[in-house]
Image 1 (cartoon, rainbow, N blue to C red):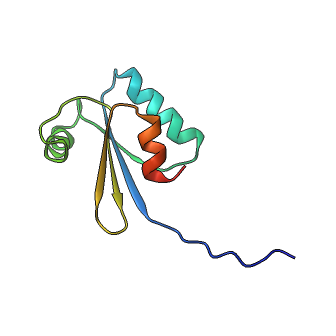
Image 2 (tube, rainbow, N blue to C red):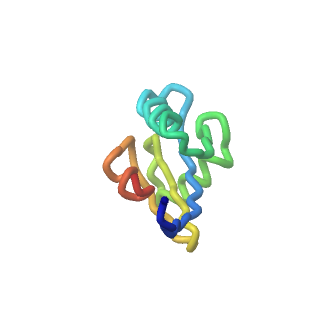
Length: 93
């Protein structure tokens, strides 16, 4: 018999800001895809509104990949670059 184990689900919205030629962006997206983690990609070299949105969230930083993780309580965590350790910590892997 399997005991009842409480499961707590947290909603996280993951947004990855990238460019069409960024190899680290491709690695980040592959990493998320391999773990079946859903995210929204915003390509800042093709979308001016996405670029402006990223600038607002990053405090003017223009490097990619730039990831914003919005938690269910509305707080945001940001990750500059493809930082597996921080990404795993924030999303609980």
